[in-house]
Amino acid sequence: MSKRKPYTRVLPTDWWMKQLFYTKYMLREGSSVFITIYSLILAWGLLRLSQGEVAFNGWLESLHNPVAVIFHLIALAFALYHTVTWFSLAPKAVDLWIKGKRLDDKIIVSGHYAAFAAATVFCLLVIML
Image 1 (cartoon, rainbow, N blue to C red):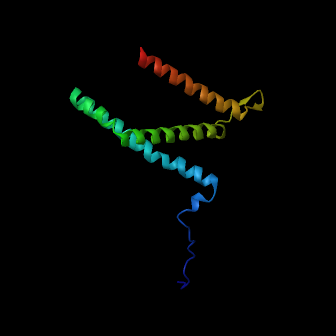
Image 2 (cartoon, rainbow, N blue to C red):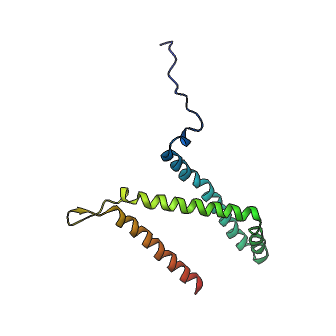
Image 3 (cartoon, rainbow, N blue to C red):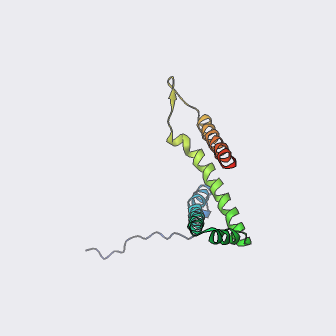
């Protein structure tokens, strides 16, 4: 057995803030915390809905708190950031070829945004009607 100590690289806690690529990556991955909390808030609302109108109205009233409004705005910003970065990664995952030519990345990303807009409009129509 060797008596030499293994090399341990010292990594500062702010390593990810030194390069823009890593900063964007960490923000994208960190956004999952806010999205998870938001999902739990919605699940709590569903539980309150199952408990009756008074419980559900109390849950709705709690969402009027300024802290809750600020949290929801932060969660929305992170969700939008996550969506934009996800759509920009789509051409790396989708390798489409038409007549022997690779489909341009801009067309793939535009298709994702168009599908997202169509699904949003469809959901709004279902909700409004």
